[in-house]
Length: 178
Image (cartoon, rainbow, N blue to C red; front, top):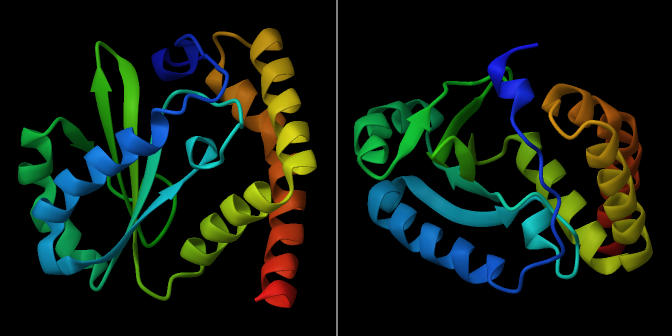
């Protein structure tokens, strides 16, 4: 098990400050990304009101040219973001901002038109519109963190099949609803 997998996992009750934390980070990112960013989305559990979550703000900058994001690595580093490249997801640029080894913000940059954007936004919007499903997700995360408090790989694997099933529902719902 690597050091990343051994860090303590926290799933906390929803914090009403998370939207403001996103806004603060997004404002800073807009100045860095300037015209490259088409839109900056708040994704992940902290974007879903009342959903228990790891206290990490996930942000999806939707950009006009993914290759140009690499030219921002140094500037993003001055604000504490570590460039991680694609980090296992082709077409993505991933960054993390840590404080004392604790994750604060994760950036998932995609070029406009990438299907990952739609997947992330559909899942977020589905959870917002379906509080019963969001509650199931919260209960799953809480049970997994109790079972694997220091094993992020096991925690993530424990959520994977549930998320994949609900993402399919979310995409179908988005297609039918919009």
